[in-house]
Length: 366
Ligand code: MG
Image (tube, rainbow, N blue to C red; front, side, top):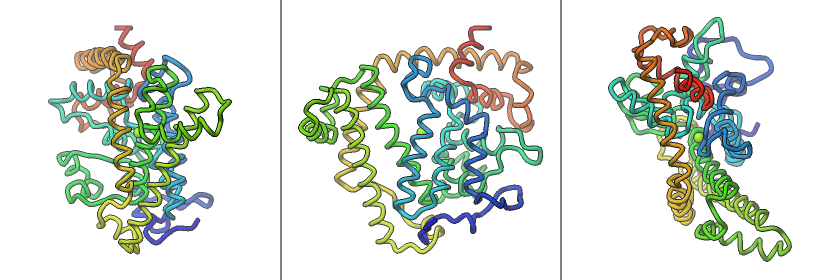
């Protein structure tokens, strides 16, 4: 592996909470990745909604395929920039482990339920999953991941919660940066979902070709591809143009970030943490991204079909929360190992870990 001096390095990792002997076969970040892939929370992502309801059609993305796409984009960018591909992969695969059923609607509903009990933040929940909730190792709670993977998984955090997290929370209070690998995954997350939500939006017919052509960057590639492939179907030209658009965005991000990294002459990951955010798009691409963002908000995230799903999901979460609040005995024992937590936090842990279909059938059974 060709690591640049500013990359994270498994040989100089800050380490794990519980010291473990080194593996003969895998570096520490590869071990983190493997632990995430073999976790039950990771498998459940398959039945959790990303944006399009997971049980509505087999061809739409769910949280699992989203995580795989983020991982693929992250690895490509990390490799290009001389960063640690295995760390970027581990962070990407773990970044959404704390997501509730029913996408953002589920998260908002759970946050409402928890408003008098410390709230619910899905990034912090992802960290709770890897630190506490995934429970199958005899010698420690959670997955005992390296500091660097945990740092990357905790993308956002309120100051109040950051104060409880020791060293890991410091950067939110000091407004300093995480590793470049963590910064890469944040952008890869956004690049992946803009791309797949547009793709799924077109596939589900909530977006038409005419609407897509409002996106400057898409239209540019669409015009080119129509000339290049005059006999191809509209679908193929659309998919090709979305693909070209994504490629162009990733290229811009790599080129611009490399320029910023070189300008700052970074010699170590410690310098990365003290420097300004270095992964980012060029000025021109920022404008294109703003157009895509606005377009997606209006035409996808606020679309009647997507909002309907939110309206259907929220009562299910409210019903589950109320039921377990009234009858805490019904919460499975494995969630009650955090005995210093409020019963509401334990209920939130349980509900957040549910798949869409499990939450629906459980709520129907009451
Ligand atoms: Mg994500």
